[in-house]
Length: 93
Image (tube, rainbow, N blue to C red):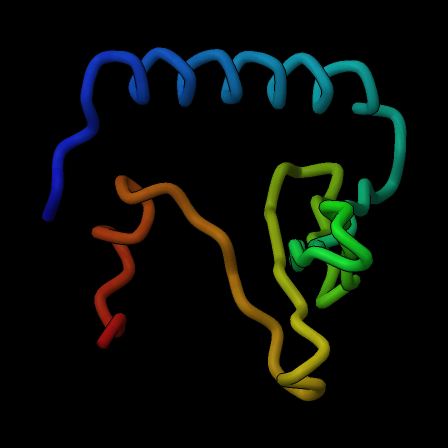
């Protein structure tokens, strides 16, 4: 497993703090949803272009559980968990 450098670690902590503030702000909501996008960069007519594709969604319940659904896997829901929680699940392969 690769280790993060201090700058990456700092960015991750800022992202976690912002995400937690967002969750706290929307606690009264039943479910929070985010779009999952992929970015395609290309050059057209000598100009740099970006095209974003919606490839799925992330759902966060009021209890804080997170789920990922990717459109290329239509009948599968992925569970998003912290490594500490992941290690407590005994049947992860």
